[in-house]
Image (cartoon, rainbow, N blue to C red; front, side, top):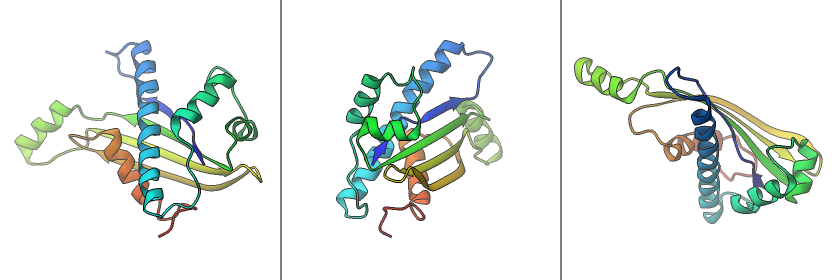
Amino acid sequence: IAILPPAVSIAANNKVEAEAIKEQQRTESINFQKEMYSWMLKRKMQGKILPEIQDVETTNAKLKNAGYPQKAFTSDEMCEILGVDGTLASNYSLSKPMSQGAAIAVGVIFGAWGATNEVTVALDIRDCTNNKLLWNYNHKFSGSIGSSPARLVDGLMRHASKKMPYIEK
């Protein structure tokens, strides 16, 4: 299975330039992809995931050599380029309804700790042999002070893996 680079969208802020948002999206995509790989590799080593997982450096190098992301590919083409039996695609939509500073202030003043960011995630697993969507998962998470890609991915994957194919329960 290859873990494709996630599509990441970040809610625009009037104070942030468009190029800075694009750079943050690229950085977060790599972070999320590596965290998903790390999570799955750990389960693979525990014997809970059956198929091999292609490392992200190999996946990204093969995609880059093929012209991705400038060139769009179908699911079939992605499978052929990567030489895998299946792909895990993901889409992360990030927003920050409350700044960390505001969350701390609200927590101290009112004793209520609000969400400092929200993440809407969509995961798809495709079978390359039959070119079929095997599994789809959509969920919305809220993070608080100290949220990181590692924490978000861990929570997401623990929740999603309960119904994910290839995972031993």
